Image (cartoon, rainbow, N blue to C red; front, side, top):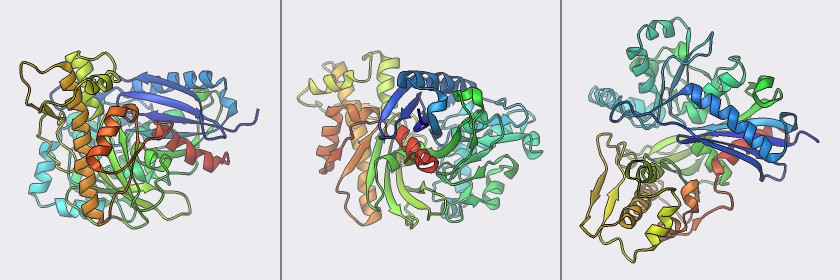
Length: 454
């Protein structure tokens, strides 16, 4: 059999998905496993980097088995990932030196407020397209260097490597030979100049990050390196790396300026393609890289990041115990004729776009003795829809043009009640694809283009 399939690793916040995509562009095999979430203090969220690596390998084996294929049947590998989650590891051993700080983590909010107080916000925004917020990786790197004993000195001596999850997986897949990232992930660090697409010395100095820890920035679609044979059963080129939201934008075929998608995952992330022109600055949305192909102009996007949507459904399941699986929320919400004025603001880890309040907390209002689990489920789904509408309205204002359609993906896109509610309050069609796992496909497609599958 010709090597004409592509394996795509989608390393998300709450789980790892691996798909095998055939030459027809469809999923031929799939594997999935949940990932442990750790909350050592209020506002802190951590992952175990070694667990991420172990789960990735196990799920990849399951996906290949599901497809009835072996590693030798693959033409290449693509990686997509939760973007701002921060890992530091030893270069010589590959051993992580601390838990990964997840993008939802708010422990650096006070340092971000200090940067703003010192008047550095406008300079950082001008260079990076980002707001100064604990969401992004740069302040997480600083926190680790300042709070793990001896780590800053080791980092300055070049002994320590930093990466978002794409870089961590690249390093492990290649036996430590590759320390790299792509512009979609680098643009989320507060350390990359969004116009030059390079690490910026002034930003590194302001955030206290030694440049020696940073990975090389390469195009999103290029051969990053070859995997060790034992990882997937063959030595394979890793030929595509994209942050998860940019990956979904690509897979949703939002190739024209003005096209918009929303991925309903742990959080929700609305991206608008703005073409080869960097978006104009806005105080309530962020500018980011959409994709970077070798020998092609870089494309940009406008983004609204909503920190908690699917995570609120997970909260209903795990903390409150009112549902067993997320899909139950659709039936519960549909069982009511009205929300009876019960509303939930899902600010469980602060508020992202367009409010950017790291100190906000969740609010549930309007509940009475007659409030039922169905009301809570409906309020949670409505909170997702209203949060998305906030961002879409801001995009309409920032772009100066209409949003005529929303392309939806992610797990909650399978919730028909939520999708209809979203369409109703936006007043535009919501297009749901046949396969809602667009982030996985968005990693596979560029890798397949680079390796000649397509």
